[in-house]
Image (tube, rainbow, N blue to C red; front, side, top):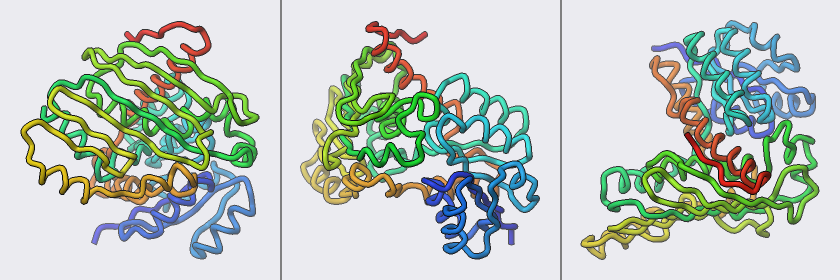
Length: 346
């Protein structure tokens, strides 16, 4: 029997979901967790009595039983921690966004290539049951030529959410507000589904209902090199948390989803039974994430994928260079809003 993967987690906010997933995996042993706050370590120890707890990340990296580490610290520290882990001989799974700037994120890719360690990024929404279905309809040509898309993350977060931890909604550590933190998953989905590189971004942002440094609302027009266009809205002001619209329209059909809940599946020449079957099959739990930030339903999948990548000596599902695409788009949104100009991509 193959040796189980020794797993560790640094950062026990969303990182608790990683720890839970590793603990439940048949192919891994949860070895250790690390956090600066003792109360979080105590809660983790209570839940997973067998683990070792650390307040010093460097000390944790010295543990030879650890093969892989989930990096779940504040976003602006992802590259620093991931690079340090890879240089210590540990594989890494990095929470979204991969980091808050392209320059920082590229350090993760450079370390991956230099050390030979594996580096994956958490964009778990690609694995919602309806997303591969929509992606296949686009890449196979079923939808025809993609004409336009409509993407909107209409979520809600309280002021307390931003105040807890002290880093959310800051440029230095969060890299943005509703777009970089909440909607970056849907930015990733957008650029993946539209099946084309971005040509330009034109945006506006605002702070409507929170005391934060960044923003709680963005509205963008995004043009793609294929000729398609998309609108993109993000907010954490839509009380009580409404939906995540993911809609793509082509010359031969239309698809609309609320995250993992398929709402429209219409194609020319397709039998009516197909639409009914698809809508009944892909019902999902779309409203949960819009309302509650602690419900990260896809972490089991991405953590298990990382564990299996180590065991099978293969790349994890989403590599740093793929995750960097969404960071570049997000930063272009902020630059456009700041300068009042359209930002063109190379």
